[in-house]
Length: 401
Image (cartoon, rainbow, N blue to C red):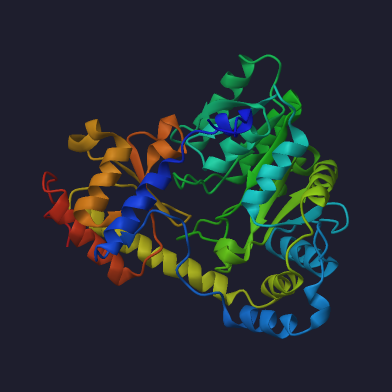
């Protein structure tokens, strides 16, 4: 007999990545050298000046007490100054900014603040899981919008999907550069989304987790740069990827003051905020030199080139992403019937390379896998060699040097 009979839990599907994590652990316990490209977990250390600030601050006993749920003023001022310098966006730190315990927590609590049971929320398919599951945990209904292969196609899919729904959706969650597909967009697409939101009275939530990891000449815009964006929505920004602070759990929600107030109120009942020394260190990250951010983007660009050339050389055709830390790879045609989960298991078992199955990001992710560039170039080359031995049915590209 089970004492846990919660409808909210029943609405959550089995966590597919858990099976792969168990397999990875078993293989490593048996001595296998598994190259993990499955989880978007940065492998580089947090920059030294940020760590040093944490150490200095934590020595002060006054910082050991409860913190502010919304974020300390110094941190909120820092993120608003950062947005002014980075995107030329004016934000009031008192009413248009709140610190979150990572973006994932912020998205989940925001859904509780904005959605009632039975409401509808638009979520691209495929999408990062919390964009979907936050809606489900709030008791609302997910309306899946095909992401499509390009930015104009996504806008059309939004229009077509919304036209068929009644009552109209309350919320739209988007994420560009996109996880898992690495799709990028231009500012005029955000402008189109603002018009769409105004016409349909929909709140927009944009997740800018990978905005600082861009390659070549591409620069990711902020949703809040679009005229009227603050009238219809908010944007999440995180220190996790930009400053290699994934385990520190520092994020922000910025924009529409009514939405910020709603999230702040929910958070005030759930938590006492981020540990103060972490907030002070995060302020140092935002206020300090940004060379570490640009250098990291260059590092990921070099890894992208190594991975793309290597996969192409062994006959696995993939597109070259313009941003993010991911390569979104179609399962080679001769392996398509396996499906993304079984294909991922095969790569782990036979090649000792962990990837994320596309089905874990939504039904339209089936037929694809996501490779995260979270290993150094030497390890990526080793992964390519392992994959080449495993995927013996592929035809190598002999023209690639």
